[in-house]
Length: 282
Image (cartoon, rainbow, N blue to C red; front, side):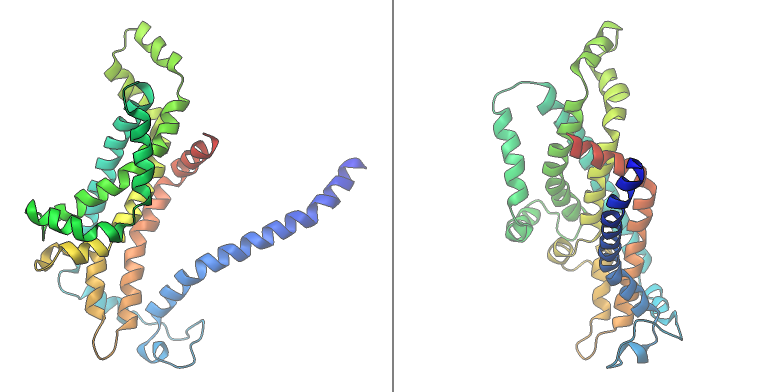
């Protein structure tokens, strides 16, 4: 009787929570749905003054214009190179730095951690012009390095601060036991500690990948004349025209840009959930 009564009391609340979750999910998914729908609509329906949330005559003409764009494959490869390099480099550096600030005691350690937080508060737009002159002085303008280096720098503070919790959660007694068994510090670092904090690395890599893959500000600012170094967000500028924008091409290009992000999420979703769970627990 008690179990049945408890079930009856909790069920309405659970239904409300599920309904609210579905509404939030629908609100989040609707822009993606409208993007894909606009990419599949023929030109007449896109320009219609009475838009409908469906189409009875889907067309792939917008996707054809995107893939027929000159050097589209090069732009895709450039974006993949920049995002992949940033993810790998920031993950490696953040892992080593998080281990250092967690396992070792040195002067200004707390100050360094506070600086990581302060770095997260500085808007990217405020640093674009100083970074432009810095890249010019180093001779990195119109190169992929001008995109890789700033994104690594902006990804590191968040990654180090987040991974610090994962490293701290590993007991120091485990390292002491490994040393007793004859393992060096380097072996402990890569064979024991690295697998334990790997879910945290995946979680931070997702944020690094998304911010780098969707970057337009740095690409527009640092890639001035060499279009062969352009990335996918820059390729969308072709569909923005002075007289009339090609919204079908813009939506189709945006859809193509979204696919690698979705694939990346599918590949790391299990590690991502455990990584975010570990961060919340810490």
